[in-house]
Length: 125
Image 1 (tube, rainbow, N blue to C red):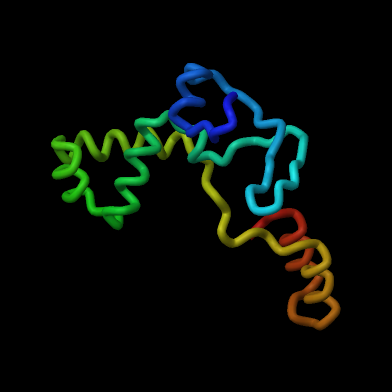
Image 2 (cartoon, helix red, strand yellow; image 1 turned 180 degrees about the horizontal axis):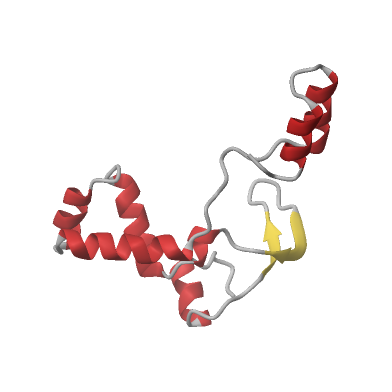
């Protein structure tokens, strides 16, 4: 690689869609480098065309009508592509299960009973 940063399109071209692992990260501000095996974020794992599509969708605030206009395709085409991309992405849990320590603390404070604590620790609703 040259001294200039490689963009994702170039990297995608080199890898031809094959999976790869990032092994070194350098922080631009202070030059600190960290080595290891780093997994790319899910959106970075999409092909370039899908990344452009997702970016456009976000910039359009999720307006399918606007996406139809930008890409010059029909509603079913936009929905089909969104569904395909959705299937490639894992759901990100925004309300993670409470930690074991949190459950035990709530049990000690009497906020939940032993049966509720066991259910939470076992991941049951």
